[in-house]
Picture 1 (tube, rainbow, N blue to C red):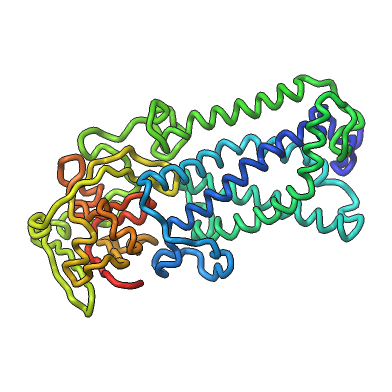
Picture 2: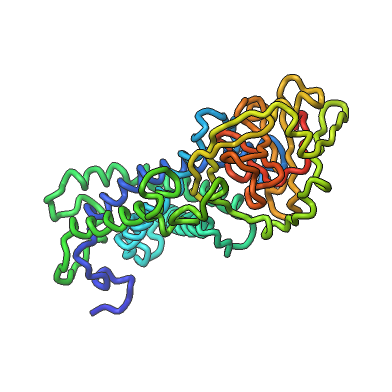
Length: 411
């Protein structure tokens, strides 16, 4: 028996073969394409070209060619796109691991480069495998709120996605025609191509290839059932035990819906949010400025919106009933009759999103509020008391809590 992984006879599983690999490859072709597109959409939702405050990926250059003003309709847009992105990424993990297992003999094949073209293909495989493992690993860690990687998740995941998808696209162009031919030869034991995937000395099979695909598909369905519920309404919310904040809603009452950071975690003390101390500073055209205590805000026209909160980690709440002052009405207080961009600053002193910028179209939407109440009661400290921003279709981190200052103008 050969002891070197570079020998084809070292790999004895009878499951490996062009047809098995091709089925997995076609699934990944569709799934990773959707994953990449929804990832780019998620990045656009942060409005990174609006202000350096929102941009966590410097020097993106041409990689930001597709950016656009993120819309506010429908209000559940980000909830859907990010929910699909995170859920699909987790569901594809068994497929990705099975695909890597099916082609692992090729990674050890010798000589490492038989020609320049072969060397380029091996390099693309290195980028493909390495990029795929990096993207899926950092994505899962971010979803689980485990920031074990060095640096910020946003630039790492953004640049990693472009490297991975470029290698994936090159691989797909080269291999898709072959994969489709293999799928048309469902009963043909003679490989159409890539015969090195099949062992010259296979062991006795313990499961069929279709059975192995069933195991992979079953693993994906299990991950779907235990993660998808935190992105969508329905009975699956309580089965999402692997999702961040999985299981039933925390607590009860008007404030009994999910958050990421508590007031204590953010360093917000009751002293600075009390009516005696807290003031909202609103600045606008030509330096015009007003300072408003919470009782003064309550004397302004109040409006209501039913909106969810959706976070980059893939979880979201159901629609909550918010009530407060429209952002466009606050802009008008400081001389902006036509809505403009706004920079919102929190009492929170640390963290990447203690400040966030919103576009004029988000300020203009009548559902965009500086919320003072939720579900008929005052905001709780953990939900942003004394005031927080709520904007339709915006990522959760742009719905700033514990608002202290708002600066309207072109950013």
